[in-house]
Image 1 (cartoon, rainbow, N blue to C red):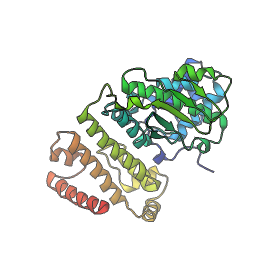
Image 2: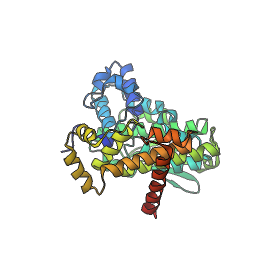
Image 3: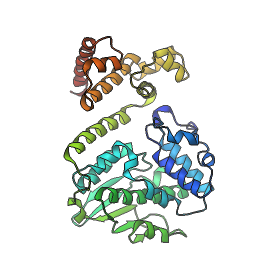
Image 4: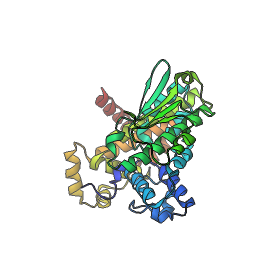
Length: 340
């Protein structure tokens, strides 16, 4: 049986989706405490800029919405409010891309950063572009919950493309596996296109003529810089798993403040000896993870700030710039050996 609450290393997403859903439910008279039941989150936590949440926590709020809301438009309204500006680096990467073809490509590449509830793919044909959701039929056991998530997912896709294009850009057709629900008229109302039910796959289809359009905020330098950051974030999301992932995220929680092994073990509810054994089983160590955290932060500071190496050394806990520079050279050599 999976744990009731998410593990720390599942919490890698800002709570924008949770906050949007809680806000919509509050407008319907549902208390935020009830919307968040079973998530381990308090309403006031949603305004904490350091809060990270998991996909499982968001799905728990969706389940609460199904039980507490009597408005079938809820997932469509939420999808319409999930503008890309709320998505942090993921949103900025899509808004600054150089063409709508890049938007589709990067939407898939960086989807891991967007609190994903289903997998997305896109295929370009001579006359159309098709978003597909290949695991939508198996990822969620509940038919009602799957429909809720798909309704929200399709609407947010339409919202995101409009954000990037700078103008209304509705799909030409939307296809759904499930049978038409009683509120089927809402689909066309919110998506702005014909909708077909009982189809072999979930598909959102656009005219391929839009691919060459330039997004309203396209900017070559910003796009390169932000995409580089997203590449790093995706790499961290892929590799930060298990106990080592939990240690990594605890150490990254307050950059510049690095608790010792005993404090981290205590935060994880285990002894330092047990923590050491778990990390060894994952072929790493506390020192190696701390080096990885410092290297990631140092790389980010050097690329995106004008801080001197002495200032960076101080932030990362080194006694002086010379020690930091020697360590950074060693980290670079280790990273090169790992990748090469």
